[in-house]
Image (cartoon, rainbow, N blue to C red; front, side, top):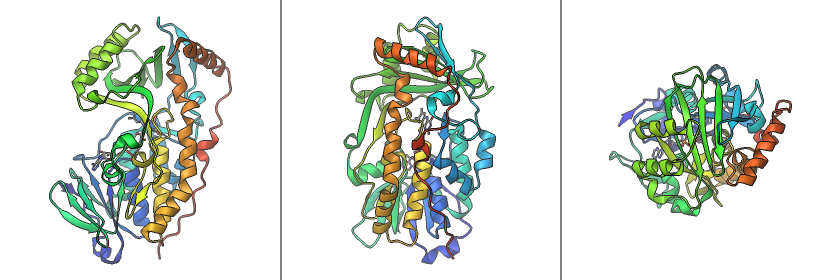
Length: 406
Ligand SMILES: Cc1cc2nc3c(=O)[nH]c(=O)nc-3n(C[C@H](O)[C@H](O)[C@H](O)COP(=O)(O)OP(=O)(O)OC[C@H]3O[C@@H](n4cnc5c(N)ncnc54)[C@H](O)[C@@H]3O)c2cc1C
């Protein structure tokens, strides 16, 4: 286990202690804001280090104000990917339509951000790390709330007591499982699976995404910049989540290869790259919907509580806004009142953004020939429209002011 040492450790004795599980997007953002509100914060992350690079994520609407208040907006503007074009292709590889990305995503040119996930996590981590204790290469083993706090045992062997614990450990959250039971109860499967990985950019693509579709299948090449690599996405309709494949990378490769076996365009080369990819990411496309986000002294934030699926492009923004609202709700309140205030202030924003799947993303992956034809007609119309002015859902929450602790 590696750890960082917060410079203000000597002041932590009288402060309320919070353990956050997960050092992705929601975890470091929550750690930053809880620290600003006077809490002593520890983050436990199962990976041995913060991971750089990664697929691109969006920061939009209200979430932009969160990162502005954290002082990292200029850094994220420098990391902005500036995707310039989406080109949609038919089964034979011919062009259907070429449009500006914001026309589909509802983003606003010059305002909203798209950055590599690793650039976002690095900026969030750097903003708070001097005042937060980070434990890498470790995770929560057990949680016991029977006393006056939460007794935590760690996989690496330690045992400590915290006033509160927050699960920011992503879509397949272990904290959620410990607290509320199996994922199946809260996972709303959206009928698709996807495989993502990187391969060499032998296509001459730059700042653009190309997507090939047949009914129920999509293959995309996403050139984030002028780099040597492209991100690939192979998305396909599947009636039930393929549970057997989730823990078996070879089964994932085999499933994807069989679904795309007769596909044209650049897909044969993508399947060849898939065989050797060392960064394969395979999952079901789904949302997490929960009736409550906390139980006792333990709460959830980000994908763990309300993953909206990548079809909305709002996962990172919900994680950032949720982290800010949770920290603000706990300031000056005990855990019960604070967690209730968090849900009360944030749930409507989460719900309206989870409902955006029909607006953009899902329409990109039609499952029938008729739906694909309708989508293509829509794309041809969109290609003639003026740039997007943003979706109301992205800004449907106004952040309360931050009041520093005195
Ligand atoms: C292929 C893909 C494309 C996406 N595209 C977009 C997009 O365009 N726009 C967008 O906004 N979002 C996108 N997302 C979603 C986005 O990445 C997430 O919604 C967002 O990162 C949520 O942040 P989080 O902190 O809640 O969870 P995560 O970012 O998943 O972070 C969870 C962290 O918890 C750690 N962890 C997990 N289990 C444990 C454990 N037991 N103990 C300790 N640590 C643990 C993990 O290592 C990780 O660091 C995409 C996701 C995928 C997979």
